[in-house]
Length: 194
Image (cartoon, rainbow, N blue to C red; front, side):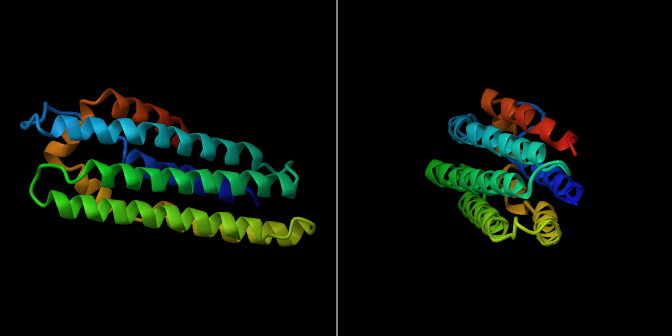
C-alpha cells in the first residue's frame, strides 16, 4: 500500500530540481543577472533542503511495518514542510524582483504563481492525510492510496514557468551560484530513493 506513496514522493522531488539551476554552460553575458541569481539561489537553497528532508522523512516512515498513526503524522508534517518551502521560494522570487531579461516581469510573476499553487497543493495533501482513519488499517490504506494518487498527479504537474524563468542567461547566472549548485546536490539523492 505504501509503495505508491513512496514512488510518488520520488517523482515529487523532480520538482525541486527545476529550482536547482543545474544547467551548465558559459558565464552569463550580462553580469547584472549575477546579483539577482545570487539572491534567489541563496534564498531557495535552504528551501530545497527542507523539501528533500521532508521527502526523506515521509519515505522513512511510509513502510508496511509503520503504524497508520505514525505514517499520518509523518505525512502531515512532511507535506506542511514542503508547502511552506514552496511558499518561501515564491516569496524569495517575488522579493528578488524580475530578472533583467526579455519578459522578466512576466516570467517572474508566472514562477511565483506556480510556486504558490504547489504550496497550496501540498497543504491540501496534508489536510487529506490528516483526515485519514488511522483506526482502521484497510480504510487507512485506501485513503493513503488516494493521497499517493494526488501526489503522483502533483509530481507530474508542469514546472513550465520555473523552467521559463531559468532559461537562457538567467539559468547561466544561476548555475554560477554556489547555493544553486549545492541545492541541486541536496535534491538529487531524494530522486533516487523509492
